[in-house]
Length: 371
Image 1 (cartoon, rainbow, N blue to C red):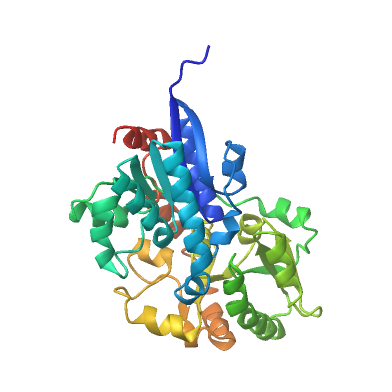
Image 2: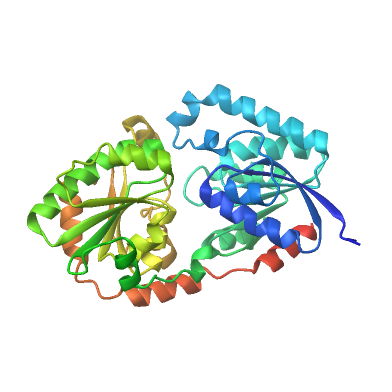
């Protein structure tokens, strides 16, 4: 006879990374409770019993302009989720990442006083828009931070938070010989990983620049091949159709770790993948480019000099950052020249892994249940 109590959990995970993080927490909660799961998430949460209210890819919007263009649809989805959570009388709402989308759900539920609110992955209040702290204080019962500097920031503001750490603390490279064999690559070649991002807007903004870099680099270094991992079939097709057939490029799906493990360096769109690359010992050239209006607004609100996660964690710029106008093929080539003799990759990897260790999933679950 199963005597575990029932726990009703509402969840919103609008990215693949959020789907993974949310799943870890749900699995830990499920050790002591029978979980009834409601909301929206990806394939891993679906395996935990979630029947998503809509396709989580509908939340794959970024920047300032893209959400505005999709505002009507986003508001509709948010209202549907709030209605569902109230009807189901959930015990906990767990918003994973997507803070601007989730904060209105936190607010609506807190005003109804129906459940405890947890935000997994802190909004970047330490970077820009610090005024969001007031909303966090009012509507969120606990913020689960991926990084220790975020947790320290919340503690200084006397806000409830925990450092759950990041899954990359247990990330190690794959065996190079096995990867090369599995992908039928030439072992006499050297490799560069190119990561244009998982969102359509990122690929659209940066892939043309990356292709120009490949042309420049391959004309100078003919012994290199270029590896581009895609997050899903849609991204795969989008990337493949833009790659000239005469370039030495392999595009694969769900193979980021494999490709990074055998690469001398990487060219990576700013985000979690920059950290993955650095932890695996493959020095990233960190790139960011958005539409001019987005950049004009964001650049005036930033409170920090570096945007790359590995640089932020290490407290200094260990890896090149090429932002907006400086993100061009020639600059990437120059950055590649500057990092190819960097032998600090392994030491930096160890440092980063240690910085990424936080509470265990079981300890995090206990903190949530104790609210």
